[in-house]
Image (cartoon, rainbow, N blue to C red; front, side, top):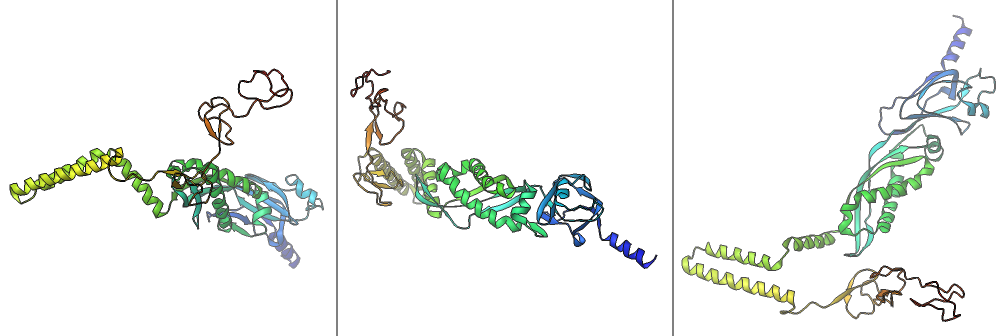
Length: 382
């Protein structure tokens, strides 16, 4: 072979004839195919596998996008490249272009969590701090848009490169979703699915412009501070006790059993029985008095703050926790006369709307059941 033939052969060999990518990393989102001098031989074979998209970038612009399949890279397959002038010499010269493979599969089991607690106003416990964590699945929905807005000219782009930005967006949307849904802290565990769907919708609204889509979003746990958890445990314990009178009788019976096992014999047994009965009667009487208001000091009456829910003494004008005004102006229902808070749109007793009827002639507000307008005398449409 002559020197000239060898040079021609080496020049032809530098042009890529088969363009394909096999991903064995599991977390690569974008891979730039290594092309020597960005020159692709006319007639080269492009193989795009399932869960892949090939993007040709010419002179900094997304020129063409190829979905799964096998292609012969020539003028007929890449009209946008033709318009940009990539093959202006009748498609006989090599194509000078960058080729990016975009992984469109779902990237599963991606973790998220709140680095700092989220403040929430709760009707039962006032202001509480919540922490949460979970997982989500992500995929590239628009390969061209993703390369333009996020990946850029990186030779390789993985989920680690965008995970931090996603986590920050998730925490922001998590806070907004909690505020919109207004789920009490006691009911959060039963609302994880609804909360996850709400957050996923918010995130997709933000990331659709980046060519990304969150396909699944899971809330695995929402935890509260220890003080709030202790209060929840106490409520659960009281609920498990149920009837306090029966519970105290059961405790007294346990005391009698322990007294009967006393090694002191008959005298000890008698004393134990007497002590057990006395203790049981005293405790049952004390609890009964508390329930009926007969014995001991009754707890001071309180009323919740309309703004934050903090319990305040009856008659207080301002909340001791948030400083909000305790008194709420009330107005009668236009239909049944029940007292409602000012600004209520519907009556809590009869359900009727609180928008007052107006005169069709002069727009004067009419009283309920009025047959004539007191301002202009026009007959109403009642």
